[in-house]
Image 1 (cartoon, rainbow over the protein chains, first blue to last red):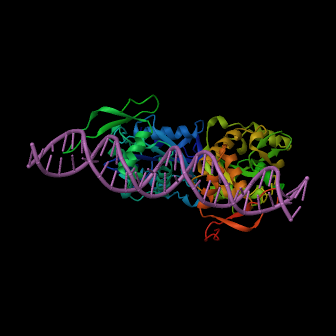
Image 2: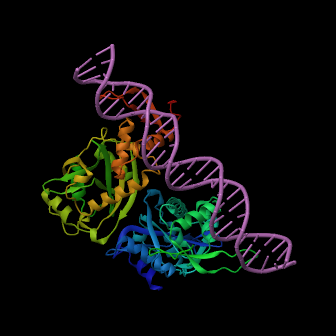
Length: 249
Length: 249
DNA sequence: TATTATTGTAACAAATTGATACAATAAGGA
DNA sequence: TCCTTATTGTATCAATTTGTTACAATAATA
């Protein structure tokens, strides 16, 4: 895969790609009762960035986002949604990409396509933390999860992109039933409530939360129970998209 | 203003503009109890299209949208929101723009920038029908309001763009208080309810609607009353964004 | 077997929304 | 002037949803 960026880099005019347009994806996961985001650390530059990419000139923009998501997580069939276009002139800053190329021993000409102004389409994805396999690209030292409340300093406006993604997630959490995408296959009601509380950043009432979730009719109670501490064991649930959930009564 | 498109047309490489990126705005108005959309009719081509434009290479994308909105409605200070990026390869069709240029007596070279693939950022705007002054651009015969349920055949994927804009409007109508942007300065409760019913495409309960709207605390009752038919005259209200509305009790 | 912590759910209160009813008009006509 | 008619503003009560409290049912552990 080391060839990939080499090709971008040496393709000075950006042949085969849509000029000036990029994709940035905020990939959310949930682990240890914390919201996580997948970040790349660029080689030698000390820069952290969101997974992103460019769009082939014969490719749908949404498909390019899928491609990026898939290549960083090894996952398919993921909740992925456009949420905003970041198009301010002020985000134009060739510095970081120039530094990355130079760190690779390549000195790009001033009119290199990657050093021009880019507009970025922001996507956010919700993935099962335990299923994703963070995979760095060829210009990154690492691809890893970072807790939302202890993020490193990020490239360009990537922190703002994350903030806006989180806002969008908060607003859409109740309307659409998307929270389940962040859960493991089987989970307790406590897990689910913790997820909601973390995303919305507020305490929820246990009894009301449980009543509401069960009332949605999309949870199937897995017959098995949990083994843990000195107390009643919670049920495990799984999400049932369609079909009739088993009778839990 | 006849020079404007002449400049785009003769600027074969698209100097000074972001390549491959455009803006389309769905401008909603409300009149005669109908939702309206502002459309342009292109000269000699029989094509109808959404107001749109291109982005200067030193301009914020959102500002370009403002510019488009302002030049078609002569309005400033309008509710304007990004809602989706239309980036499918299948929307790539140089035919319409070629036809427009040819109708103007200009035969563009095959590699003309306007004939390349474009990604479009969709915006929707909510305007006071009575305040907007529909203004055609230099390649249009007309700029006019069309009822949403009797639209002419539209260029490219513009019908889909409108559909998606309406969906977005429906979803955001209750959360944000944006409906008022479609009203005239002063309006009756009946007017407002009619607007909501038209957008949401369903009947609302009069008493509950009135109670809810008044409960928001953002309506000021204008002392005047309406003069009309053989019945009690409704109050006129106006929207108060901040500040404390007058005591209506 | 008692203790402890947590779960599932019942039971009731509070708040919100749905539905109905009715007094208060503003014309127009007897 | 006084009915008639249609519509508005709001009160009232019912139905539904959400907030709160309480408690029985466990699953370890002592």
